Image (cartoon, rainbow, N blue to C red; front, side):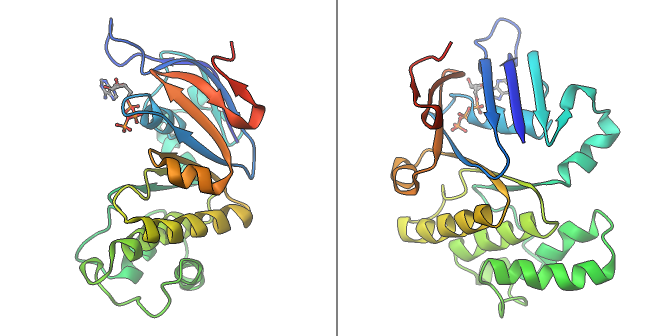
Length: 229
Ligand SMILES: Nc1ncnc2c1ncn2[C@@H]1O[C@H](COP(=O)(O)OP(=O)(O)OP(=O)(O)O)[C@@H](O)[C@H]1O
């Protein structure tokens, strides 16, 4: 699903690498936490997976494709096969819940009959059926994040990337969001979630990849502690 082969990323010549010789494989149907202190390289990992950035060296494969071989005009098509969720929700404030979700299908030209069935299905998945006409400011933070997750799922991606999705939520609301992400994973979507929240990571008992100053220092699924090279 995702393969990083000796990937390094240096943003500015001479600066410390944001990722330093990272080799990781995420298999189909896995749920993986990406943890590490601020600046350890989590967002860089996600940006490379989305091909928002390109590696300085090494190769990145996502959804069976070598990202270095994909021409720029094909990148939007690749991103259509992924969903992403952010800490700050990023909803359109003057659009209803329904419109916020539908727009993700409309912008990529999905046919009307698809949208008419996929949008209610996505809202049902996240438990927001009945709130279609609300505007984002009429929802709680947890509900706003659910809208963002419905939007990420409406095109039925194989891979969901989440960057601190519970970062703006209180602990009990976060638990609900984690249950939802777990359910999405069990229904067949690979999930990679960057987080600072140790409590969530401990509760969920999933694979944990820890980055420190751009290096993988822990990969719990493989039982490796310390640098694995
Ligand atoms: N666009 C950029 N230009 C220059 N340096 C960058 C850029 N983006 C990130 N960096 C640097 O790369 C390193 C890794 O940053 P990254 O954002 O990947 O970490 P992070 O683990 O996601 O941190 P946080 O949890 O605070 O989001 C940091 O030293 C950061 O300053």
